[in-house]
Length: 187
Length: 174
Image 1: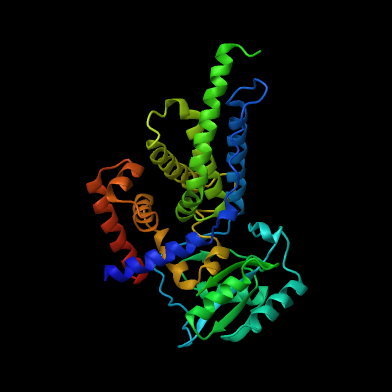
Image 2 (image 1 turned 120 degrees about the vertical axis):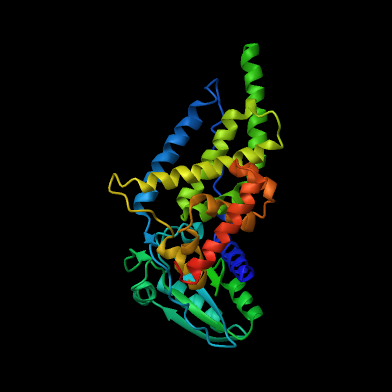
């Protein structure tokens, strides 16, 4: 029994880890001393700034609290299909390629066109901000995990069905890095 | 002209900068991911890792064994995560209650995995640390023990308790 739990855990941690890429690593600001300035003067300032930003970040984070057991099962996946979800940029996205802007309508059309024309892609569905928010609320309605999210907190996306797992990976490669695309997740 | 003491200090600073920057280049991403598992949000994970490396830089003159630098910084990241989690638990300044996993991230990783993350965040911090170090960072029991500052035996028992608890939560049992 533990084996399947271990597998699920490894898969989850790997996927969650992959949401951070090398581009997300900021440069290290050691604040080297120049012109005889003390070695520690700048790092201390940076630490103070970092501490301040923690407080802001904590205040702004959506909350998911778990008190009771999680009993819902994931949505059933149509057998024989593989799903990829292509999340579009939101102002709040930390992905630098999003430049803190929402994906434009034109970018959205471009992404859809690029994916739809790929071999092995069976269906492309757009999930709007409103849809995403509703699905998220439905998913956790009555759940012990309490969720605090507004429309717009959950990014809009394309749900892409592909024939094979390899097609799904190709969609991921194709979509990642396009203007207006934040993250791509193979479900 | 710099006085001699000043020059020696500048040389030490250079050495520290090079060594710490190298270590950062090789390990910052892995440690940010580790911190993300522990605290559940990216800005905090980023800050915790930056602070850990700044701490290493400040203490560099006292770091005798360079090989231990990674162990030091890994422990510093875990400590930073614990502090961040503790800060959240205090309900002052109108902060939200413990953020476990952001709504956005839950959607990003898919629902099945979000369940695992929510379950992971209901475990005691020590148990979560053990699971993340063993199953994500793929550290040995001994390395995990060093990072957590406990014995290898305790790592073993903590890990198996944590796995069992995770299994119970995911199966919806109390």
